[in-house]
Image (cartoon, rainbow, N blue to C red; front, side, top):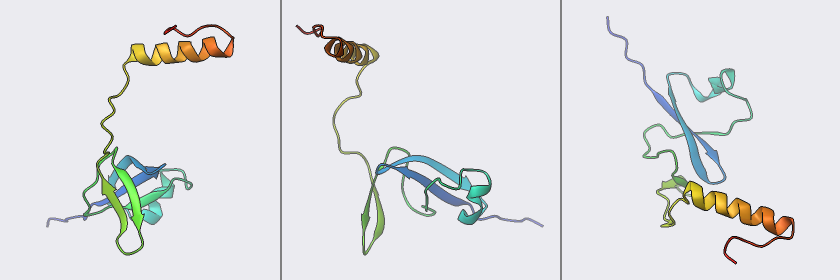
Length: 99
């Protein structure tokens, strides 16, 4: 005898973005047994969404998932370090690295 389980798919949302997707056979009500009860989950079973997708809400359609539209590239480590150095220099009254 073969037992087929339906997989449920849940997305954790934070600040309008999907930050984690969890697939399980358990219902949403049981997620608090393995995750913090304060974690906000949305049932995305059968919906197209991935980590990093932007989330909006429509009163008629519910949650709408879309790919980020920003064309900004992720800063390199060097750019991040320079930015942090600039911020520290400004805080201590020094000059920035660009001038």
